[in-house]
Image (tube, rainbow, N blue to C red):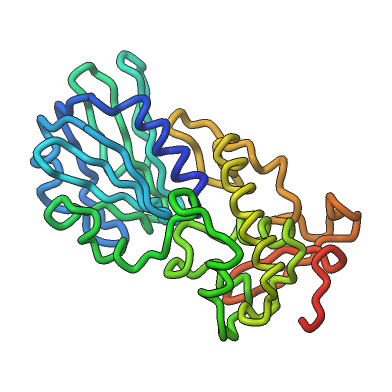
Length: 279
């Protein structure tokens, strides 16, 4: 699933390439995503100009003139793709929204597994959307500190990896970057979040503030389906220390990376660098 660095990469590229463009035509596949695509999407988009691109956690917000805001979530396999004017390219299967701008540039939303999301924000105000209202602070907008994380985790018996994935605690961190952050912080992912010391939480916070900008600078991580709007893979995968590297040597100490399952999701860690007092 695309996480904060991937969605922020998409936001920045869309900001640079579609903001200010006016929509001439819209075609829909008619298929349902996680929720039905609004029936009036094509009608309400036609003639509108894209004014802003924003992001909170893993949600992309496309602001149009007239006070309309379209909320997008990429789900497991969703992606936005831009096709320059004059380029002869047939829309691939699973293209659910095809936007054509007045200058001939096209913007497609593709989603093979259809777990993504497209819907209007109530009243055009992102703060009123129920999905956004449930989110915790965005770690780019409000970088966490050891003190803030420790306060949020006080008394929690949840494993720290699971705690970091809770979007109500921290919006945007996902499976890839939670594993990477905990490795850099030297914290065992099985530890109870409420048992971490202040110093350990400070290391976790510092790792979050370091890892996310590094991943964004390399356009995110591509493991399977994620691509930028130019159909390019993210390049951060070459820097992953533990994620998806089970059995390979830890880049810090050489110990084989271990994989376990937590909450139905894979967790990768180094049993030497992330030794736990009580796992």
